[in-house]
Length: 278
Image 1 (cartoon, rainbow, N blue to C red):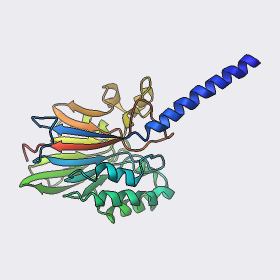
Image 2 (cartoon, rainbow, N blue to C red):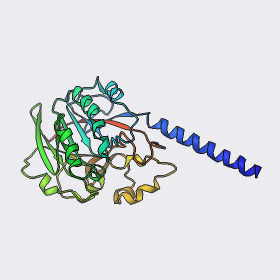
Image 3 (tube, helix red, strand yellow):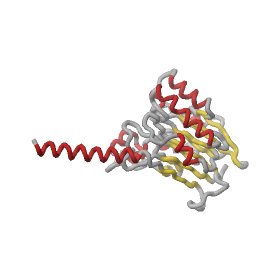
Image 4 (cartoon, rainbow, N blue to C red):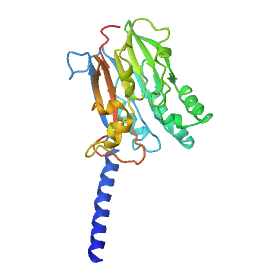
């Protein structure tokens, strides 16, 4: 009995240490700079189109406050903010989004804020989902549900293409591209698995999230196997190429399930795009 008690204390202590470290990891946010079509991946080019990507905020489990988010980004020149889904999944959390939206507006992106939705957002039922969409729309975000928009930067045309969530079977690629003409095609979507279905679809760069870098990526993110074919191709986070086209999977800013991370970190991403063909 005495040995059993000692063993139990040992196991509880080890688990407590792991959970404590996992929670601390949720506060250690990474600010990643990604350079696309640049000749120098170490220097920020004043001519690049700078996109701030925030994904998977999961406001039920987020350790980065609005004030800290602003302090990390306030000195960064930003042309466009891309929000790639999974803001929350509970009605009572919707008001928590507002302070973060105020931060995004305070960062004063030259071409505004664009937002798409993820599978967790669609856990909300109407009218709660529409309330989420409304708070985004009323606070400076252009929400794209299989829609597109066009911005011009230094005489170059950028098509902003918002493809709705693939994992919940809401994607309509044809509708997303409706009416577009030539330009730099920047796709915003939530689930990166969609790239496997975009072989003949023209895009220059695609931003996604959904996988959290595994969130618990230790020793391996075995639980991600159910998250689609892209995981089996060992594409879980970061910059990847498929069929000659580049796409990025953000690790996300918040957590889902339990508020811990092992082998991953919350991520803020600054994409520096050289618009060669715009």
